Every structure is written in structure tokens, then in C-alpha cells.
Length: 97
Image (spheres, rainbow, N blue to C red):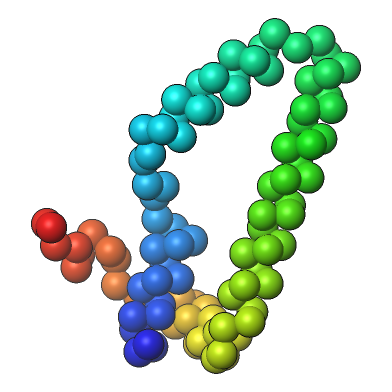
């Protein structure tokens, strides 16, 4: 992957928006309804469990990236490009597909 492209990916991931998934939105609404019906004590337990799941997912994703050959060096180059302003906004190159 070229340096500018990786800078673009880095910029897109760290500064971009979140893709919308209708099924996910429904699931979030359903989960929120359930959480609102819980007692404070049970809500704390649910919150702690969600924090655990969030951390685990993050750790697994990080490990997966670190196992990719050349990823760490490419990330360092991308971070340097961002510092130097060598990025391209996704909106500037996005095509209507």
C-alpha cells in the first residue's frame, strides 16, 4: 500500500464517520429499552459487562492488526504523514458508486 493511501486510510479511520447499519440501529434501540428497565445495581453489572466486551473486542482487533506483516511500519509512516499534513480527505476522492 502506498504511503499516501495509507495516510488516507489512517485519516479515514481516525477522523471519518461511522457506517450506518439498520439492523444494528434496531438492536441498539432494543438494548437501550432493556437497560432502562433495570435497577441501578443490575445496570452497573450490565455496564461492567459491556466494558469487558468492548475491551476484549478492541484487544482482538489490535492483535489482528499487529499480526499483519509490515503493519507497524506502515502505521508509523501514516502517523508521520498525518503530522506533516500529507493526507487527502476521503470526500475529495470519493466516487459515487
